[in-house]
Structure formats: structure tokens, C-alpha cells
Image 1 (cartoon, one colour):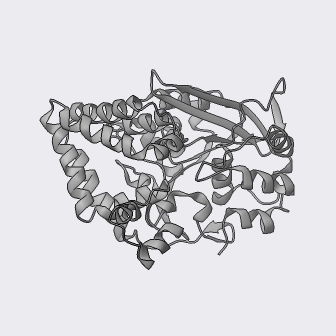
Image 2: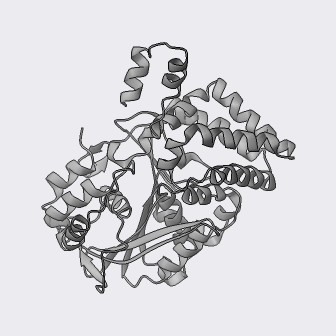
Image 3: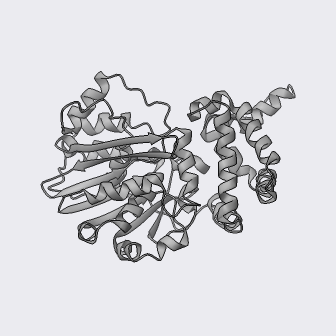
Length: 385
């Protein structure tokens, strides 16, 4: 089944002048935004994709730990005429543990008039995920503020805005709150499985004015794209993976230059949409903040800063989180922790298992090892996924 890599094989010979930007191109730019470009530009203000790719390879940059490693897509894009003359510029990457900021964006100029602004999604840093959780408690996060400033500086006549995961949230937020004269030049804004917003945000005039050009692409077992609220036109698409693994853009199925669509979300996603969101809505903003701060303070206390490090210290990290939640003086926070345990013991066990598999942790196998039992065929198959 075709994916975005295959798209570049058969569509890569058509320049953008002959075949305009489509939704698959915007996904490709969203994945390319994950490329670690910090050391690649030197004194140059812009680079073609082939030039950027060569410097990336020469620098020996390794991003294989990311579930959506941009390198395979970068290498293939550099070889096809469609992307050969695309100019990459205005790369920004900021991470600040103190303010819980993780922000990155870049601009892809596809022609004399059109540019694609791509916002990077959450990387593998703990601070990046901390800011994601802050979407549920803050009217504006530092990354959202920077996204608005970044988009306001675009001078292209035709602007496409996109991002995957958190990058999709930033794309929608920035497009909603930029200056009016910039918003008028936005052709399309696309969030690829990105989380939504608090209700107050969606009432803003700028958000309402961008909706006729706003699109939300969700895999059928979406998790992140169903968090909080969204009003953008929704398209549900098929994936080759299951559960939370569908968040990976490389698993999304294509038909020609569009995604393979389906009519409904999976039972897995409906569980998230109907249960977890209602659970969050029942808790005050103040209690959400206590919960989030407690969890991430516990994670930081173990000395980890990335999810690779969390995988190596998974038991230590889990113990630190649950001990911190149980020790808190907030009855509501303890209730939230208890709810997580209940979710894990009922239908939510599917969610917990998928999350752990997503980060390469097989809980069932570890438990069976402790009991000196062999994993079942189903568990072995799940682990291979």
C-alpha cells in the first residue's frame, strides 16, 4: 500500500508549476520539518533540498530514535525534480526547560509566489511533551506565541501552513491569530493529527475567519487529534498500523495524490473521544495544572530529559510518577491518578498497552517474565508491531 515515500517515486517528476501543492505534499513538508537543521545553514540564508540533504548526510546526523525519522523522506525528496528546486529557509529551533518551550519551524519556497510554513511537532524531549499538556491549561503557550510571530513575518503571496502533531496545533493557532493582512494570504492550513484548543480559543474572530481554509487530517485510530476541541473540516484516513502507532505519518495510506479515506473512527478513538475528554472536562484548570506539574516534576526528578532515557529508566520513572501523585495534598489530583489506574484495568488497558508499545515497552511480556512464563503468540505478534 502506497505511502508518502511511494508518492515521491511516482509523482516526483512533476514540478509544482505543473501540479500544485496538495495534501500529501503538505504532509511531506510537515515531516521534513522534523529535520535537525541547527548546524546546516552556516552563513547561507537558504538552501535547496538537495543541498540541505547533502549537508545533513555529511554531518552524520542520526534521528533514527524518532518514530517519524525525517531522513528517508529527505533523501528521496532530494532525488526528485518536484522538490529539487524547493528552497528551505528561516529555520528556527528553540528549547527552554524553564518556560517549557519547544518550538521549531521552517519555510519551504515552492515557487515565485508560494511558500509552505511548516511547524515541527513534538520531538522526543520531555520539555516538548510538557508543553503539549499545557495546551489544556493555558490560553497561549510559549510555542503558540512564537508560531504567531513566525507566521507574521512571511512575505509570500500565497501561504500554506501545516504541521504534524503539536505542529498542527501551532499551524492552526498561528493562522488564527496573525495579522489580518497575513491571514488573507493563507491559501490553506492543515493539521495532521494535531490536538485542538480550549473552547475560548475557538470563539475568537481570527479562528472563525480561517475555518473556510482549515483542514484536520486524522488516522482512524487517532488519539492526539481528538484531544480537546476542533472545528476545522475533518478527514479520517486509513493507516497500516494499529492504535497509537497510527500517529506515524509513514503509516498513512495514499490513493494517488490524496489519502485513502474512511467514514468513521475506530472504537479505540471513540473511547478516547468519549471517555478521556469528558474526564478532562470534569476537572478544573487549576487541578489539571497540579496534575501536569506533579507528573513532569516527578519525571524530571529521575534525571531524564528524553524519551529514550525514559525507556531505559521506565520502572524508575513510573514509580516516581505514581508516588508523587499519591503524596500530593490535592484530593482531585489523587482522584485523577486513581482514574488512570481504573482506565488501565478496563477498556483503557488498550490505550496503556498501545502507548507502551509505541515507546517500545511491552508490559505484558515483562510481567510474564517475572512469573517465569513464556509470552503468548498474540503478545509476540504485538511486540513485533
